Every structure is written in structure tokens, then in C-alpha cells.
Image (cartoon, rainbow, N blue to C red; front, side, top):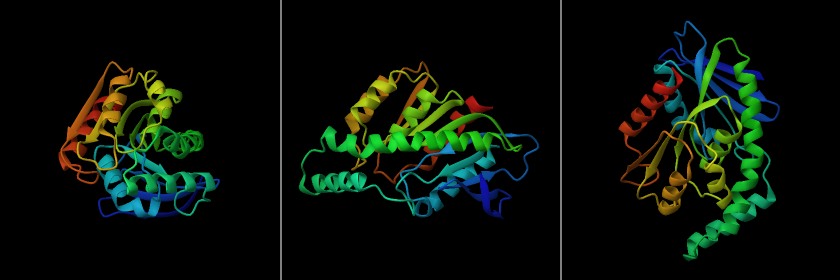
Length: 243
């Protein structure tokens, strides 16, 4: 891990950009931490610079609760090399949505599964590097999307103790089977009127999770209409499980 820039935000949070090999990322740490901070990994759908305002806001809320937060760019996102297969799958998805044709499992699998296979090892390598820093400790949480990435991480990464997942992306059928292996506490956020989300698939996925403690919070509104109190509820979830 190599830090490439740093700045102190107006609330005292230290923001540092880094690279891990070819992977760009950002780390935020509380300004007044007196001990190694618990860590929350911030998931997103790709396009780190485009997503920065929302990610930074989420990270600053984390820091206010005493958590460090970190994110990385997804494979094929931002300035990272594109995959021709992924671009074709995305084009097929958009074509289906524009023509009103149901999005079939084959398109979703081509779009999401290769992303999961590439992104999860990168998240785990990033976690290795972050936990080697003296200012970062455990436990670790994962928050956000892509939900199939969050599910896979919850299954294969024992250092993640709790996950807050955003049901706002397409779900491959294989992810439903993986969900049965998830046992950590979960807080799942669903926007009821999300035009890009299959509501029934999100409900079926929640039902499939094997966790004994799992909460589904469903709010009216579209993809970007998440109410402020929903974020506050998620932070209380992580405070309960990571402190």
C-alpha cells in the first residue's frame, strides 16, 4: 500500500488516497482516535471519483462514531481497464431495460459474477494492508453494495464481523445459495420503489440469509431517496457489533 495524498477535513478526519498495486482507494481515519479504530469497508457500484461525495459523507459519519472507513475502485470502474465481456453484458442489460424485456439470469450472471470473482480478492488484499497500519484495528464491517460482493465477502472473509448491505443491484442466482452460508449479523436496506431493483429478488435474498440476526429496513422511495434516519440506523447497527 502506497499513500499518494492526504488532507485534513474540516471536522478533523484524515483522508488519504492510496494505491495497492493497480487498485486506487481512499482511507478515512478519525481525527481524535486514541486507540486503533474499528474499520468499515465502504462498498459502492464503481466510479470512485463520481461516488466520492457520497462515500466521503458516509466515511465522515463513520469517523464521528469512532470508525475508520476505506473504499477501493472496482475492477473496470473509474480509470481501471475495462472488460469487453462486462461492457457487452452492460449493453445487453441496458437494451433489455429500454425495450421492456425482462432481464434474464444469463445477463446478470455475465455482468455480476466476473466482477465478484475479481473484486473480492482485491478487497481481501486491501484488508490485509489496512489491518497492518497501527491506527487500524478490528473488528471489521462491510457496508453498501454491490450486494453480491458483500455476500461473497461475508462468506469467505472471517475478519468481517457484521455487514450492512444495500439491496440495490441485480443478484445472480448463485448468490442466493451463498447467502445460506452467511452467519454474521446483517442490516439490509431496501428502497421499496427502486426502479433498477427487483424487489421480490431482494426479499427472497433476505429470506435466504443464514444469519440468526438479520434486519430488513424497507423505505418508500427510489434508489437515491434513502432517508437520513436509515443511515443513522445503520451506524447504530455497526456501533452495536463493532464496539
